[in-house]
Length: 292
Image (cartoon, rainbow, N blue to C red; front, side):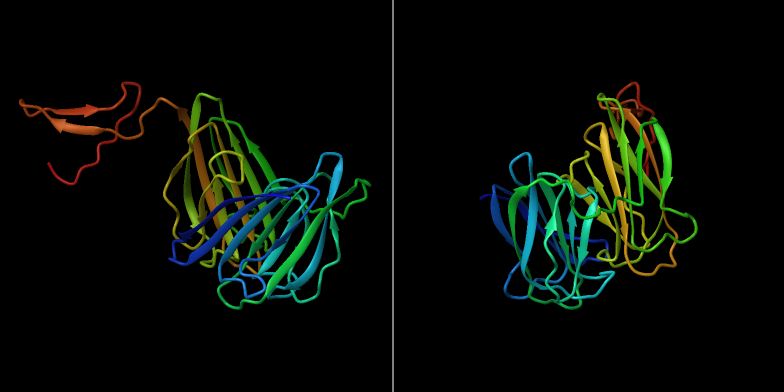
């Protein structure tokens, strides 16, 4: 089994809760994965994922040896999600919690993506599972894709959570792929933001590109995040909710701009007292100052 530990870091939500994030890539004909600290209790606010690959033309079979994850269906707090594919927006095979060892899970293809998240409230032993390659039968478990999936290719646009400005539905997953020309970038602004303050319940993720390893934001609460600029021509936005809801969600706006366009510049006063603004000629200028 080949194992690559991608990263382990701490980051803060707007409410200053520290999430423990870890990401792994596992490949080979068989192997093992387990929750952080297993067999000791997993940490609060864990946010971990595993991308598992077996040889082409085979499927992945996931067998659980031990399982103790706080909660009961529909798994609103701690949960283990198994996806039928290589990334965080692949269709869901199972969403798991509780103390009963789950039945084996078989993918339709050669890769699965496993996510584990925990709340700050109760921590248990977690899980241990083995994966192995099996002959592909084409009769894998039923999957559940995102409730809404959109590809946005216009130069500018608006999008929002389902039912906005009315409350969004519980247990919803929505995906927006924003794609522009190769020589352009994307600016994303949240015009309204009204989610619960617990990011393990409801949150928005933003990725710099369409790769789930490039997350640049996870946000929740009632305060909109700052505007985001992509480094290239693609941006991925994912919204997930669990539990009951009475909040309206969010509305966002995006627009594209040339990669060469400066978004900030400098201003200085010359000897004659005139202000010199240093920015590209093709750019519009908004001058912000506290005093002259």
